Length: 457
Image (cartoon, rainbow, N blue to C red):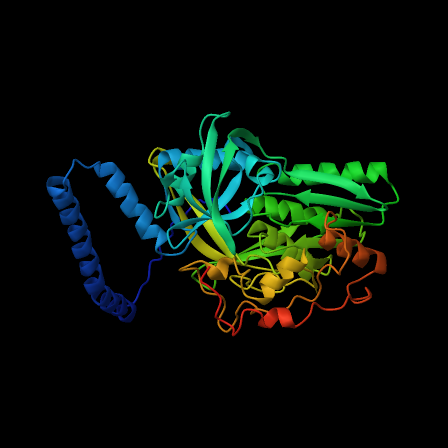
């Protein structure tokens, strides 16, 4: 999530000899750690100077310092980092919903670029790239160990040019795929009628998300004034802007809390509320999620689930329950710092960092996917990222298990089984009232041997 942040300082004047003595003791107690910080900063300067003078070839000091900033911030968690001026400009273009590239949301895992989600209707989507795929090289040049911003720079460029990505995928030999760069005009919303039920898919939370969801629902209601319910599809939605998450949830909620965010200080709580008025006037809803549903998508799914406004069908979501604040440096001329500043909580007070939103009805998209989940080979999530922010004490993501439902033998593979089950829930009135299908065979869960024996993701 990206939120422009205004920091306001405050001074407190404290009177009394006892209090002043306490402050003096505190200052003495913190002097030593500060001295160590200054010593390490001096060490950094010494190493930079040594590198500049003695490295085998000339070095670019600016690039070295930018790399040091990126390394410092990315050591905190996978979502903090330094954005050089060009990277900051790219980020702003992305949130506006139009830019040149391939249409892939990526992250970094152990120095390897990993796909969070391909965006609907983009070259990456059409090429069949999947969440969890690793990108090891771009045009034959390795991207191993590169910051995400550098990898993005290599994939973006002039529309019409070909780009070859080297892909590593679970249980598949490495392969190359050649894509053609396009001006990415994200189609944020797609919608249609499924009989008497509406279907709206939101692919990302950019600046257009709320307006396009509203327009799609109004269009569906105009086409069928007697529409009986809505499936809201957030699968493979990697998130985006916090204000748009609140705006989208507001479309369906008649007032009340959507989400809260809490920083380091327990008293630092910011709450976001919906306004009165539900555009669907209480029509039943089902939200579809999977492990590619992250961040803002989880805020919306969690809010609708907690507020009993919708039931959730699909797979446990990604589990990114942290808030990133983008702080421009010198107005953006020196780039920006993206810093994790808070966790977000659903209306019921759940932090879903690492654990994700668990569906009310767990449904695998395919029998193959069900087997992967059971064999622990389908665990790409926030919890799988190195150095990720801890979940709340005692909470862990659900371990390997056979999902509750998967497509039965003979189900048409061209059809969307998760959507089929979501509509079944609407027709039957609730998950509880929906007849359940036989659970996939337990043997799937033991196919990989003991828990923990699967290869590292």
